[in-house]
Amino acid sequence: MKSVQIVSWGTTDDLEVRDIPTPEAGAGQVRVKVQATGLNPVDWKIIEVMQDKPGGYGAHIVLPSGNGNDYAGVVDQVGEGVTGVSVGDAVFGGSRYFAQAEYVVDDAGSVIPIPDGLTVAQAGGLDIVGRTAVASVRQVAPQAGETVLVSAAAGGVGVIAAQLVRLAGARVIGTASPANHGYLTELGIEPVAYGDGLVERLRELAPEGIDAVLDNQGRATLEAAVELGVPTGRINTIAEHSFAAQHGISSVGGAKADNKDLAELAGRIAAGEILFPIDSVYPLDQVTAAYAHLKAGHLRGKVVLEP
Image (cartoon, rainbow, N blue to C red; front, side, top):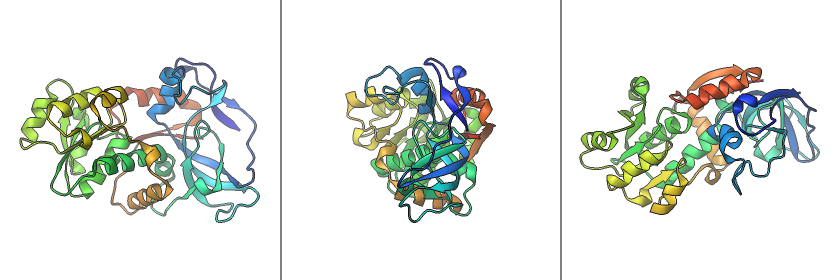
């Protein structure tokens, strides 16, 4: 089968699509013929940033290695003892380091049925961003009538998190590039430009203060939150852990959301309650171009590969 392979550390430009043996489903496992696999920032950071950090995502990887986490497709093989999942079932999930390939093997209990109304591309890009959005929103517990700031609100995690906050009854202010301001407005999110002067712009938009902050961008958002007096217990970041640790800010991510949470979110997207846009779709053999697009930023939703 074709598989995206990390052959050296340093840059995603060196990723290769290679032919490797097709995996077989073992006891309690299923094999999925992958139809879509989403890209996440952590996937390129493993290659370019994290591989030499003790305990990091890439610290134990032996090269060459697969890459990617999110996938969606159709079950084409079931292992011994599997019940509740059958050949032909449309499913999605996450399989760290193996998803960017034509086939992936996963535990039968880890796959989630794709609900009617959810596209394969959406399902294939949902695992990490969906879990992360649910867990981070739950951490800051937005309430009706509050004002919540969501940074990078047009991106994969941000666009879901912002809509979850809005559905909880809170007012949402979202940072984004000017090109995405109209898009956020259509979603009921009040856009604000990031960069110099952010604190002043937020004071103008919310003179009575901001109650909670969901950071998907980094230090600048956290510094603004602290300067604005947002209680540190109501701030969560997935992007700047050292600053968070110094200031008692939480860094809750997708590990705090389970399959039930993800299945519920998928159902809400399928029902049209939450918009989950796909920014762009690339064939598997254009993986380096897909990563270049992801790293350039200013996205509206997810970048997805199709094997």
